[in-house]
Amino acid sequence: MGTRSVTAALCISLLFAGGAAFCYARAEALQAEGRWLMARGSAQASDFAQKLDGTSVDAQLKTFKERRGVMEQAHRWQRGMLLGIMAAVLSGLSAYVLFLLKRLDDQLLDATGELRRPQEASSLPAPAFAPSVQR
Image (cartoon, rainbow, N blue to C red; front, side):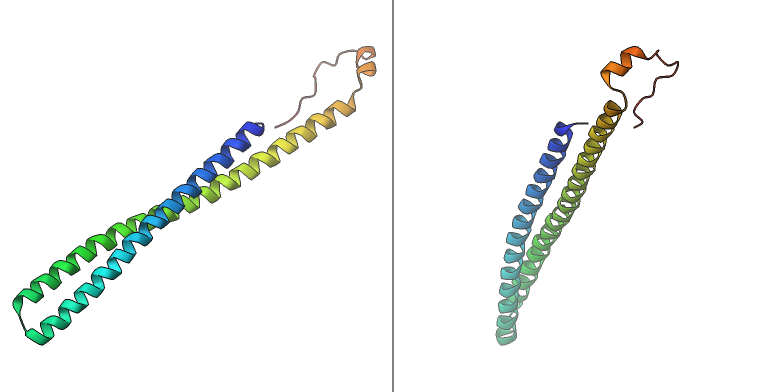
């Protein structure tokens, strides 16, 4: 439990944050395409209202079906973004906990080193039970 574990947790956090940013960019592009398909479907609906032609209805239904598929993909990317954000926060939090544990371990080592000086350790008999650092 040293600086390598803290560094690894921070790298994992950055990796998840980058993945969340990628998912956000992908979802935003798909939503823009969905907005365009919605505008196209609305234009086809107004065309149908003017002409009362059956081909406009079929084209509008096809456009709305495409939009639904695009929006489903956008929602999947949004879920990936949210999972990436949660994983980045949790790994960042674990990096902080590992950092605190390392500081505590260093403080415990300093405290046990100050209890017994090297000169006194050689003059004292060895105890039956040696104290150890509790973790």
